View (tube, rainbow, N blue to C red):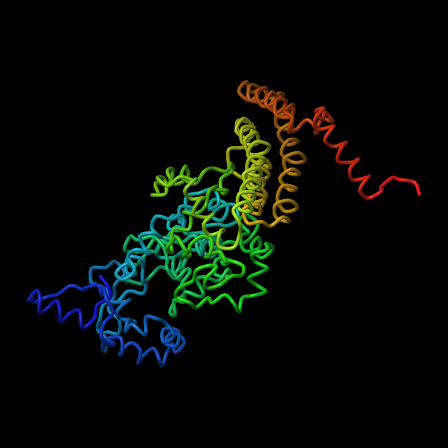
Length: 491
């Protein structure tokens, strides 16, 4: 147990009159800096002055909460060790986990524990990690905690955002394959999940830094979830960049429309207080679509599958909470129309590409090599939904048109028609000629499904079979454009 102070010990001794004490958690700031922390500071000022300077600029410093109050450990803690057995002679642990932070920040930690952030380490058993562990990597990173080896691509890539399972070696040292690590879903030696310092970087733990889009951008960027890039393209991001000096990022109270009036940040929409809502550390409570899976789902459905408390929070209530954020700057009709556009895009992606694509890929499975990612189809389908499909959906959700179209639906369509369908047709043809009766049966079912999908009005154009309605719509659009811009007219 951590956060021991001399003040707390005195109270416990007087109140309980016991001869041996375990460590007590500080629930309120100590009246003065503890002698243990003063000893820590004196040493670290010489050896790691940057840490001390960061801490000196923090609210922890002003509340007399220092090194020892956060790092003090009970001898029974799995990662406890005697620090400096000649001078300090105290049990400490390097990791300050959410469980430790909860001694003073219980509400915030409880919210974070129920969020997708805390479950981010679930990736350790996912398709993504297969890529880093096997397809991209090998098992040559050998440590005491991983005598059979691990992949450095996973350790230095996936785990640094999603979190590692921190292992404590026999000598009490943290295994180098799992530490340092500030992954948001890190699984700590005390069993807690998460890393508060992923957003509130030690040792200043600045609220302003946590409100910065760049902080979220450490992990939320790239081809499969380019939230930072999408934000920067959006009007919100442009406004923030142009007027950052007016954002009052350091303000303890930080309500849009009151403490700042320009473009919101990630924190504004997903976490921060409004005129009607308190701050939340569950980043999913204002999201009304989960756009991470191959098919977009309502968030409560995903939360139920993951065993998270959000299973009891419907998407309508979540959307109302996000609309409350929007109302700080936008009118009701503006917000309602945005959500109409957003829902329409999700419906388009789901019905035209995701659902038929997923059914086709499942039917093709008997025709594939058994190892995942050893087939062209594996890569084409994965990138279609995991990269391109996410960009289209997330671009719409944050009002970034280039990500919605050119980096999103354009690539989804190209992959679907020029890569996915031809590869499925090739597999079906090959399977139909197989001597394996199971493969011939699978090929027949796949061929029928391809025909069914391409005969749908969404895809008839592919075989040059536009519906009459589509033809009329296209003809009207062409004539309107010609009339408006004088195209094709003689002068």
